[in-house]
Length: 432
Image 1 (spheres, one colour):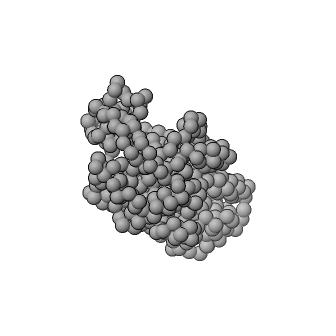
Image 2 (cartoon, rainbow, N blue to C red):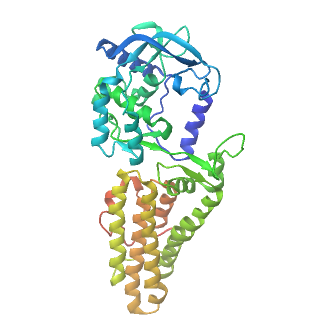
């Protein structure tokens, strides 16, 4: 576990994924909050002791009901299960069923993608049972001991889920920090019900709001097959970064399929995106814009002069794209965001083709028009750089430097593209 933990941290750095902290459930600050919450809920009568009977799989450390079994064996590992009856502690999860159903029905953004909403509501059609949250120490040695009964340890979800908030200290600290509720709680589709039901009711019981949104992401297959060591088709992300660069991988993963659905990875599709979208479209737009500014204006961004009808089409498209991207971020519709951004890439390329800078440069009158054409082309690239920065941070920093913009994109922010014309004329472009 220690080795995997370190590998994940290193991979996050390579993928330019930033985080303020990285907490594990083995840390003292996490254990302290778990014990505090357990004690408070026990004192309020939200946790009680009762007998529990079920079919137990020792290797999986999990109970199953009779209907869950696969030909009498564990449905996960297919090993033999034992019928066990013992006393354990339970969280009164069932009492929050009506509240949770109403919350899901009344908040269209609570569970995303929207297709997953009915999955959770279907689970809640049956009476919601209370949640077993402990195991006897005699049978399970590891785990956080219950503060009110040292013969038992906390079991799985009542420990693991609290890790989302234990980074901020005590419950009072969490409530005062403004950190919670989270805007988005990102989970795998296989554990959506656990988060939407278990986690939401736990938070309700301790006086915290559930996340504003629980988003269930899909899985990646490779050439139509599930990743498997036996098939030797596991995609190693570090090797992909070494071969293609991190921004290409980030772009492909977020552009190729609707976020939340399963996606299929292939090198052919990746190379297709690299060549078509990034090299031929965006890369070509940047190169020819910077090169023409160098050729016609000595590499200095010109001040706009004579306008034409093509300018309005470009600025209107830019405004439309910026507005639509803002809306799509709230839906975490990343592939749609990138599709929309590429509409501006295409429109800017078409703008250059229609205005023909190479022809305008031949006459004095045309040169006045050329100033506006090249300025607007560069300004469109500035807007594109800001829009694409969350997806391709390294590439967009390079784009900005080529335009002669020294201010970090994070300091410019989305607000700087509300109005067209944020690019300063007179600045010197640079080579990549």
